Every structure is written in structure tokens, then in C-alpha cells.
Length: 523
Image 1 (cartoon, rainbow, N blue to C red):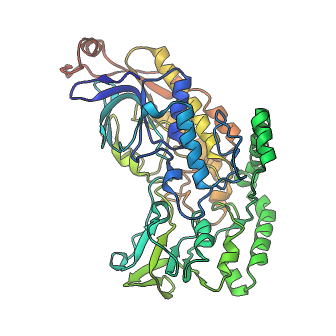
Image 2 (tube, rainbow, N blue to C red):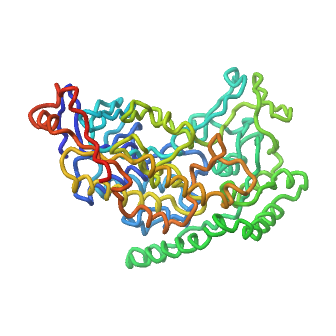
Image 3 (cartoon, rainbow, N blue to C red):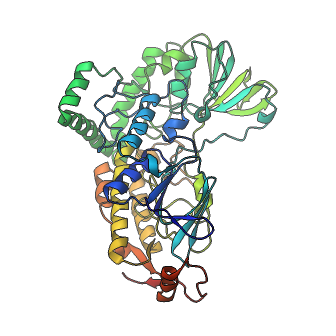
């Protein structure tokens, strides 16, 4: 890998990938497959895995079937269960890093502090905790589920017991025999509750909004199935294709005909009735919004755990902490030894956006202050040669994010090809008109979806109530929309001849002030 020194000990690469979860490792594999080896993967932690490294709470598992929640180019015939646990997914990502020889490209313990677009040299200057870099192109794959969100609760700092977030689980703290408050009822909480309920003295669940929970069709994958997948790789592809096809057919109900979900709602109500015999508890746990508006959760153990004698469900959010007493918004008071927050992540206000400084000196967070928007979920206007994986409106409500990531990697590969074709020191900057047109189209389609019409408030929505998170269509449609880069949607920014000469002759220092970038309009 060619790392060039560029004055002041700063190393230069063609591409810097930020993050080493599914998005970052996928980008690294794709770069190698495109013949590009001049890149680094900057990772803030000490190992790869992203959200599957960070979330190690009891019961942590994926709610997308294993054979669909893996790369198409790296099938795994040996998944032990139909829905994989965290440790198996993390091991799979380590395996991908080894198989595709990504280790030499990894720079662990290198948290990005700031990325600044250098308008003179047409490159990104990157400050990290592990040293400084510059790159022609940045691929940001930090992911929306990477920075935990803990609500600002009055008195929390006075709590004498243990406090942690589900994504920062404290494995040194023994919950056995303790009185525990679980805050939140999302995807993490419904896995944690049944995992810790048998060992804690008392578990109090603070529920602002109940979730719709469906049975999880999880089972061990038999030795025979795995042997067949190993001997006949086509069977793994067929299995994946079937899982994908079923979900593609379901999309219409979420995006165009939410009323069709009424039947699924009846099944979910029957699921509650089977496990919860107490009518008062059943009423607390039955949502008043259309199923699918918030993420549908999968569990066979959640409702049975809530029916146990050592569990209380408080149908209200946590509003205050007084010493070791937690107080709900409805006034319910409970003495606890530990508080576990299952309160999600900074999704519509990703912290990385504060650290990206574009061509006009504004941060991405400032540019997105009225809502995230990126051309085809990837490129933000004013941030040349910067792309994001799992960007705005690329999330899914019912299928595998790996499908969306691979589509975005197709777009990334064509983006780099276009730069090669254009030749010389060059950058692509998404036109504001193209970003607006794309965003308008997405938001128009969003209007009739269950996420906007279902009558709930979810983490899919930003503070102004706009859904800037979910893709309102099928994964096939998204793949079509991201197959190639349309240069008409970009401004082509070139280095001036004077500057290029200086660059080629030295380190790029001492470029004259008037040697600014040239913009080719209507490329």
C-alpha cells in the first residue's frame, strides 16, 4: 500500500475509509476488488466489528436471518443459527478482515477528530488520535448505530448505584440479586429483559411506548444443512435469495398500503394474549399505533419474562432520579441498585457530522441542521470527494442493511472510476439542485408509508418530524438508483494548472493564493 509522506509527517492515501463495521470492511473489500490498494481504514476502537463489537449485552442477536445478514461476496455456510448472536456476527467480520487481507489497511485506535476539505490541494486533511492523514477521497462508514444516546435525566449524576447504556455493557458488574431499572423498550431492551430477568432480584421496565413484538423463528442450523451449504455453495445463494424475495414482497405493505398490515397486527395481538394473562398488563403492552410504524421486534421470550413475579412494567418514561429512587413521569417511585439505558443511538444527529468541515468552512452538522440529506444516500453538497455509507434515507424497516451497503459500494466504485476517467487532480461535488431533487422525491414517497402515517413517534424521525432515516422502497429499486454515478448531478472541481505544477514539483507548499480550484459547470 502506497502511503506517501506529505510534509509535517502527514501520510497521504487515495482513499480513507472511516469505521470498520459492515460498511467499512465492505468498502475495503470492494476497493481491493477494484484494484485499489492505496487506502486505509481508520477505526477508533482496538478491533473491527462496529456495532457488533460495541453491543455485547446479554442476549444480543440480529433480527435479520443470518444468511441474509452477510455479504453476498462472502457467504458463510456455517452459521450456527437461523438468527445469529452477536458473537457469531463479530467473528464473521473478523473472518472477512482476514480472508480479504484487510489487516494491513487497518489503523486501529485512530479516532477521527476532524476532517477538513482542502480547497487548494483538493484533498481531505484528517486528524486522528493515531496520527494525521490526507486522502483524495473519504468514505465515511461510521454507521448510525455507533454513538449511544442517554437521555438527560435530572438527578442521574447523584445516583449511587451503577449506570450504563446497553451498547456499553459493564461485564464486570454482576446483576445477580440486584434491583434493576431497564429504561426503554426497543430492540436491545427486548433481548436484555429475558436474559437478565431470571437472575435479578427485581426488574422494573420503564416503557414510554410499547413495541409490537412478533415471534422469532430462530432455531439451530442442522449439521446436515451446513454440510450441504459447504458442498454446494449454490444452496447458500438460493437460501439467501428466498429470504430476500420474501422481504421484497412485504415492502409494498410498509410503503404503499399500510392498511394491509392490519392482519399482521391481529397476529401480534394474539402473540401478546398467549403470553400475558393479566388484562391490566396486556393493556399496557398493546400499542395504539399501526404495526410497522416503529420497528417490529422479534422475540419468543420477552412477553413471558414480563409476566414473571419479579418484573414490573411502568407504562411511563423515566423523569427523575432522587438518590437511589427512580421516578417515572406518572409519579411511580422505585428503589433500584442499577439503571440500564436501552435508549438507542444518535441516528439523525450523527456525531461524526460535527467533525467534517466542507468546502465553505461549514461542518456537515451545520449543513444538515434542518435535516439530513444526501444525493442517493451518499454525497452531501459542499463536501467534494466525500461519501457516506448508510447515509440519509438508506435504512430499512424489514430487510437486511447489508443489501443497502452493497448497493452503496457499487456507487462508491463507480464514483472512483469517474474520477479516474476525468483524470488529473479532480473532485466531484454534488450539486445542491441534485440533492434537493433526490430528497424531494424520497420525501414525497415517504408520505404514504407506515413510518409517516402509522401514528407513532420513532427514531426514524428527526426533531422536525421528517423521516430522514428510512428508504421508502425495495432494495431492488435502491440498487438500480445507485448502479452508477450520473456526472450531471455533480460539479467537477479541478486543480488549476499553476497549482498542479507546484504539486508535482514538491510537497504542495507555497501555492499562490489565486491558484484556486476551477469548477467545470455542466460536466
